Length: 253
Ligand code: FES
Image (tube, rainbow, N blue to C red; front, side, top):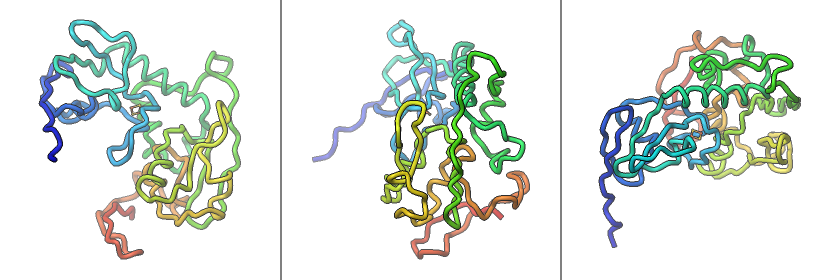
């Protein structure tokens, strides 16, 4: 039996009316009319945990404003919804979310391999977020994990991880390897291979999926270290020669 056809839903986003099929998220509807909303944990190819909260927006439905700011990547549209993506409240909230992430992040952007190509850094610039001053309310304990340098291809520095979980989902949902997962709890939560092993002692095939989705410098390609900054490196669209599947990807040269 054919699935029930999706009904069109009309919403207003930043004053622009847009009609999309029911089930569309507010983020997707905004993207359809070219309105950018910042995201860290969202990836259109992966499932959506709605965990980073950076994509929050203000929503009014049936004339009533929602008290909380819902994350647009997991909120579906309803007829008559009015969405504001960049009010003062939204901007301040996103800035605070970024500062909370920076509160447990190494202050080594000057020499980080991902400088200039780091979403956390770009959004911090855009929203005026900074590392918390010493002694301020957000200044506190920081993680101090050993860098996993155990294999020839991938460098994992969990001190730079923001727990967006994209690497976990890419490894399991796309590659079917399920090597990475969340480990431990609370402040000690981190992404780790099974049984907290080093990567070389797991079923990892070094496909690089985790590297390609990581929004910070937490998982990077080892052979690129010291080879140049993001603005020194050009990209070409090509086909991977390794396994014969024929995947297209952007090769940095
Ligand atoms: Fe929406 Fe992370 S991008 S919650």
